[in-house]
Image (cartoon, rainbow, N blue to C red; front, side, top):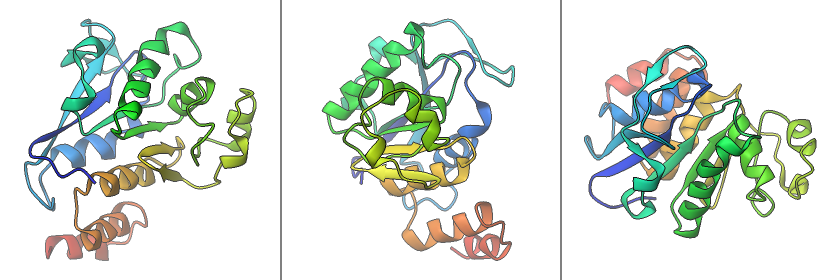
Length: 207
């Protein structure tokens, strides 16, 4: 759990970023509602270059900073959304930054195709993990198949993975790792957004 003062969650942005996979993460990290310490966390976007990127949904995003400017010492977590670039050379700078973060003991969270990028780089060979499907990663010939977990999201020692179909569970794992909410509040949050149970809303209103 991160216990420093003001902390920044860095969201990697690149062309073909899968918008829906990180919507719950960005909105609820950046909004102070129900936070254990309101205003403790913020979102900043980071990219390989300074040019605007275009998401899969056609949104244009201007990065706040570049990967070269980002230090793990200044970050609470690096989040890697799904994308179509993960098997190409264009994605290697993001993998290199993920390695840097893990070497420094800073959490990394990857979802959908980004997990494929980590698998190709050998970063899932010694961590329990998940992805879109076991077959997806197995087809890459990586060495961590025995550690695959058939779960929506998995956190193993600060390396969080999730499937494209599980953006809520992915967000919940991130919030838990960062300690953004009290455990009971996080349970109510998931009851509302994950289980679609309206009682979670009333619990949150009373938190």
